[in-house]
Image 1 (cartoon, helix red, strand yellow):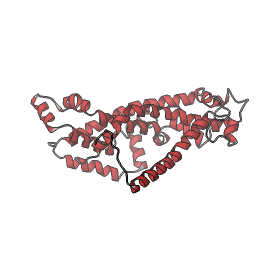
Image 2: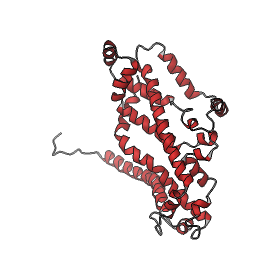
Image 3: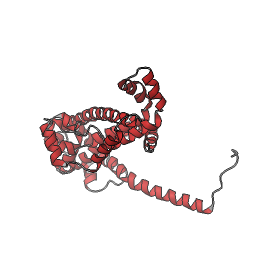
Image 4: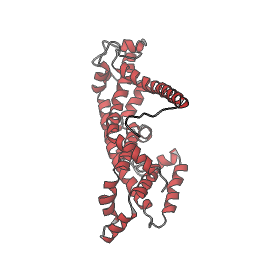
Length: 299
């Protein structure tokens, strides 16, 4: 097509484009407004939040909510715990997923269909909460940091995606060349598979990291020591149980009531808890579509 020419749309195409834009704008408003409201409320005064004056922009801007968040030791400790669980758990998840997907992607792996069937079976049926708790308890993981990373060390669905990616991306000739050069499977994974699997590793990292960062149910079941609680448990206590310690109130107790501080902390803590995910996503976005689309092909 010449650069000087433009595409002529039919009337039905123009109507469809217009309606599509209206629909997407409506969806954007539905999804975006709650986020804007939370951010605005986190920077507004407690009186404005409690009285419902905040609609779009911050009212009576203040940083009291964020001061209360960062002055509280339990929130800082929960933030550090969540970061620890996310980094360690994601590293274990990605490693286990690649190690599980690699043999399933090899054409000469005997019995791979049987193993794939066993993996798939666990996606449809599970022992339930009580057997899982008993297993974790018998392993001595209750009230330890390992309880947050070991029980879900590998996601079967992610193994299927990674297996398909490896089967469709890495040619079989590479495996044969590696065998002729005397390369072991571990060496092939380290030197060939991982360097060529950047897109799917980025996608897996995002999936697992977001899951660990937002995880609270495991901590609710397996952890008793408050020093081990992740940030989401702290957030849950504030949102659901409305717990506000005296430490949170020490700097602003003379200015605000308990309920007002709790409301302000809700929004401030939600923003603080969302920052890591928002920071990570732009770096893996370019790999996201490529990794998911290639991994979604039948192999």
